[in-house]
Each structure stands twice: as C-alpha cells, then as structure tokens.
Image (tube, rainbow, N blue to C red; front, side, top):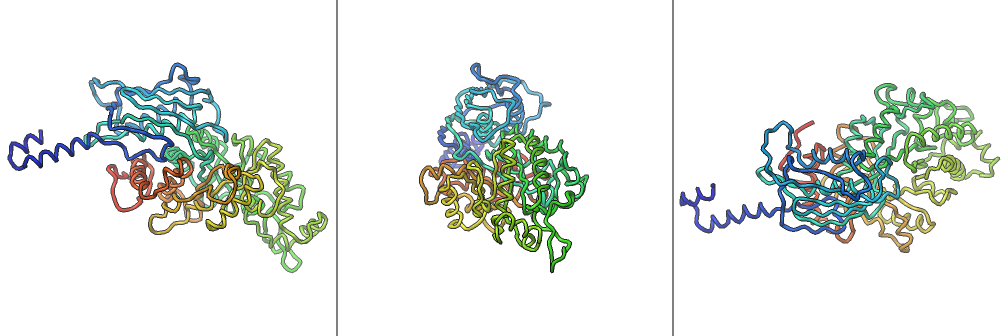
Length: 537
C-alpha cells in the first residue's frame, strides 16, 4: 500500500521504489544473528516458516523413552512456550487459521525424575522444516539444551509476527563441567536472586551452580544437625539464612533446568563464622604465651573437629544429591597455628616438625576421607595439590590463582600427576574494568598448555566466579551477564569456530538483547540499543 502511494504521488523515482522493495524483501529474508553458545554444527537457510502461538505445539515422539508426565520436559514445554512467544496473552480473541507447527521431542533414556550428573549426555540434534521441528537427544538434559537452542532460533519481524528458518543442528558441549560460582556469605543473596541466576545460566547452557554458601563473614546455611551455626553465624538468624526448604527449592529449580548444585563448605580457613555457633572448632590464637581472644582456622589437632565434620558432611551429602562436594582448602593462614602450643605439640607428636603445610595436608586428607566414605567425589582448590597432599586420584583440583603463564604451568603440573582439573583463574568476573573485558574471557584457551593429549582430556571444564565482597542482589545480574556468557561459549563451543572476537560481538549483542527480553538485567557490551529495552524491575 505504502509503495503504491509513493509511486502514485510521483515523489520517488523507479530506483527509489526498487530499493524500497529490496529492503522489504531483505526483512523477509531475515535470519537470526545466531545461537549463543554457537552449536558444533549449524546450517540454516533463508527459507522461513511462520509460527503462531495459537497453533504451536510441543509433543513427544512415538519412539521416545519419555512421554507426557515427564516432569523435566513437561515443565520445560510450559517455560519455553512463554520464552518463544513473549507477547502472547491467552485472553486475546483470535480466529485461528494458521498452519500448525509442532516441536517433536524424542529421547533415548527416561531420566525424567533423576538429577543431572557428571556423566549426563547433553548431546542433541535439531532439525527445523515446514510445520515441524524434530529434536532428538540421548537424555532429557540434552533435550533441554536443544529446546534452548530452538527458542533462540525464533524471531519477530517489525510487525510482531514470529518466524523460524529452515535449520539443521548437531550439538554437544566441549566440556562436561561449565559452572558459575555465587558467594552467599559475603553478601546474602535472596533465594529469588539465585533462582533468576539459574534461569540465566540455562540460557547460556551452564550446567553447574557452585554454591559457595558459607565463609568467614557469615554462615547462612541452616543445618538441621547444628542449628547454632546459622543462628549465631548468619548476618541475621531469621532473615539472612537458607532453610532446608530454601535449599530444596534451589536444587529442584536447578534440576528442571538441567543444572547440578555443587555445595562448598570451605575449611580449614575461611571459617570465622563457623566458630560462633560451634565452640572449640577454631584454633585459639596465642600472644606471648597466653590466648589473645582471637581465633584462626579450624583446629586440626582435636579429634572432636573430625567428629563434627563427619556429622556435618553426612547431613550435607544427604541434602545435596550431586555426587560432587567442594571442600575448599585454600588460603590457610598458618600464623595462629604457629602461635598455639597445643597445635605445635601435636605436630611434634605426628612428626611434622615445623612444616605447617604437612599439618594442613593431614587435615585435608582426613576431610577428603570423610566425604569419600559418603560416596562423594571431592573438589578442592589448587592449594591442596600445591602442598603435596595425599588425596584420592579421583579428586578434582580447582585452579584459581595466577596469570595465564602461571595457570598454564599449574594445568601442566596437575594433569601430569593424572588429576582432573577445573579452570577458574581467568574468569574471576567480580573483577571489573572499564571497557569490553568480555573479550578477555572469550579468548581463554583452557587446553593451551604443554602436555600430552591425555593430559588435556583431564581438563573437565571451567567456572566463572562471582565473589561477593562488592556484589549483592542489586548488582549481581548486570555484573554477571552477558560477561559470563563469553565464558559459556568458550566452554560449550568448538574453539576453532569461535576464535574471532569481532565475529562473536554481534551475536553476543543480539543474545544480550534476548536476555533483556527475558527479564535478565544484562549490562550493555558497548554503544547501541535493543529493540525491546529493559522495562524495569
């Protein structure tokens, strides 16, 4: 209509009209900027199909091991319908003459009621053609990743109509462990902020929530075995705690997104808040031969310490279903141990002399043995390896320190010893700087260190850490997103296909706009705009 009006009015030359028609056709040939993180094999054409919320269906394939009643997928279908059609409201009158479109999901194993674990396959194949999409996966967790990809393929034109292009995708993650650490001790994060983070994690295909739940400043975890730990160690015993019900809610929400919950109870250092509710646990510090009234790390010389830890970890291992548990073991200050005559006497008795790294090793070996007896695999910070501690071969080491040259050396050393490793050092995302620091996170190469192919396979993944000194619920989301998504693509996608930061930029910008549309307060990458700007809380 508009083109005809312009032609009749004589204000436009034939060239103008041609250019205008061409621009309208180009709108019609739109394809999405891409999927984030980039799938392993991805082909799409300009052939597109209209989607209508009134004629759009999710269903199970006839051969699928899971059918209606599968809790994970039934919930995912409801969630993704709203994410795919954000404008849709049920109350609208509509005479539906649209062609139906069905997403048919087929999985090989019915793991609908289980939890994702370290061996869970996240592989999926997705084909989009006229009137249907076929999503095949080995597990429900792979199907969840495929549904996320499908949702990102859908786009709207300028008139609000929904489309998807003909597409073929084969996809799987490069690394099995793709984590985000939240620190809920330095600032308490309300449960709602954690759940919102889990949502955003799934949009970037992260699959492990590392819950650094307690530390020096506060102990918000409400233990059923030792209620005084939170009643005396939390910032506030009623408002700033995670009840057993809160923890179950987080684990349940994470499960529905295919996210594992990895709890960390860091010791023997980082335990000041523990001492308030558990007298006798921490080491009394001495000054000039008398107690100074201050306390240091957990006291490794007392039998009662290990009895307490055994009871606490027995509870933790029953509350958190994941087979992994993080035991910390970093940044232990030996000053207090050195000042305490009982600790020094214990060291002599054990033949440790004055080597306090041997005392820490003794403590950590005991804690790892406690968790091994509970059938849990331990993750510890790299300090435990650096102090030559004797720990089971299946323990995972977590690298957090150093420049790229230093952490590459550490990757080489740990993997040469045959231990599995996680890389976090380059992704301490709580550190902020002016400009596009996401580019640094994007160009990390987790397997770029000198070692054999077998050694490189021992790098099981990586983790983005958001330490909480300067972070609470007011700034968590914008500080985390979309910067963490740069690491997400590095951990999921093929490195060769995603080595160009400038090519990644428009896709990440587009993805950031998707996050905004989904209610995630993701900060801008640079100058620009989103079609749907963030509309407030």
